[in-house]
Image (tube, rainbow, N blue to C red):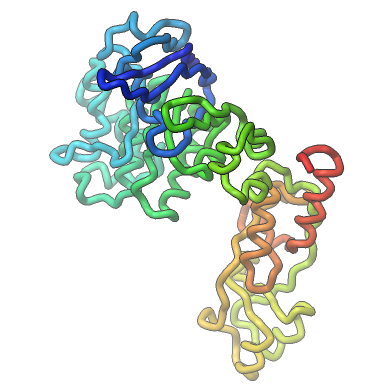
Length: 380
């Protein structure tokens, strides 16, 4: 547990970076600090490991005032991940990860063995251990940075906009990887970002800060989206906060409908008889996994020839469901995205193996949202 008790940071020129910040980052949870530039996010983070010292107030780590600890000793028990990974360019990936265990007294062999384990933990192949940072992609470098931060198995992990320098697709993969790691490792994480979508996705609790380091609201993502405390928070969250809120509503009540499927390689003439009323079908492989869409117009142009991969229309996210139940297991946001992004306006539901089990349309999602409002699960 990390406790901020009326913590402020004032500089000699009178600038107030953090102003009377009071909040608690609970043990084994992800606490996200979010806000516009100049709101004191990074300053607050760096005061935890004493890279910056507070001007007033107390920060307590596991009940102990951090000013009672030697700064170097304190930092060895706290993992730290920054925006550009901060890897040593002259050291291999393995040696970068092994740095902290060596500092804490591990032998070189033990430190490198730990580094090899962590490569697998963060989803990188073992052969990358011999490479140097410049030989890695940006996403791979960030994974190495996370591995290095975890190398001494610290109970606390500080992350300062670690994914902001990579492209959106890699960023989403890294966010998912962090959530997976957290489910396995259960660290106390304080995460800084300027992106409200990232904050809502990753945080168990989210602290929205104003310019000048004032805490505007500290709440769960669902509560933050449902009931922003003032115009500043509402404006920062954005006009589409209602759409974001769908991510916290269970999609279990959405019934799955039948989806027309045809195997790859089937004759176009035969496939025409299997299309839905809207004139679409999902083309699947031998494991019933979706490969793409085929339409009546495409089939008409093919005559009697067989459907090839080059004929398929891409588009539409997949919606994973619980094959043990009759409904969906994800969120309403995932279901709506699957339906709206599909060329057929019908989202494809798949089980854990990736096989098609049905579909969902936008109308079903809207009805589920209306039912949630009627039950009081979300505000009207």
